[in-house]
Image 1: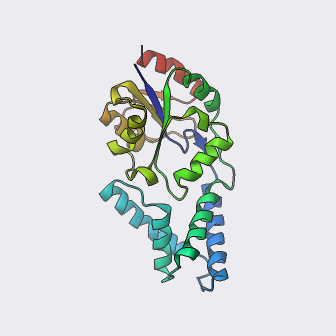
Image 2: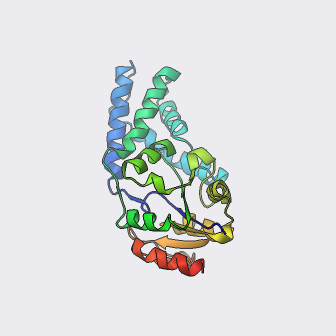
Image 3: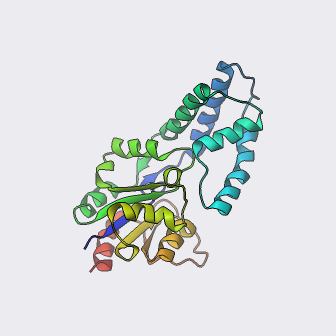
Length: 240
């Protein structure tokens, strides 16, 4: 019988503690790009990105999806009444996405060894919501750190069209490996996204607290771990 383990990306597989610095660099790049293409944007683009936040969450809650990088940049540009041609927009979006890794977010402690061990007996997948860094860039990041080889299934929200806790986000990955929820475990750091979504679907839910610890909010994971070295024993128990 095939069995699967899926993982969230940020603050689960990969730790990123410098998001603000990255966003500052992205805004600076975008400002310089617009000037170079003949536009006259304000000194900083903070207002446009601030306006995009409630719009983003309104879509997330009403449609259970995360707007793509391209949609988000289009919103910011419209805030300033700036219209780029496709040939102008595409390089901007590409560079903006690539900059998500500029400060080198790193794998969480002991994850590489744990993935190497688990991949010998189980099918591994990723179920991750994406923001300004799309799945195509995240795959390259995994490959850079030698982790891509362990995964057989991928469900990035900018590709699947749904965000956690929607069941489609999880089933996109599980369907790729032909495993049902009852024979799958999901690991992630967010109770309302990872744990709630997985448990609603019938998966076993593992909350990872190695990067940060959240309030329970009444959502109870099946297991809580702070060190990936704890996971193999849990998996053996669940699938015994």
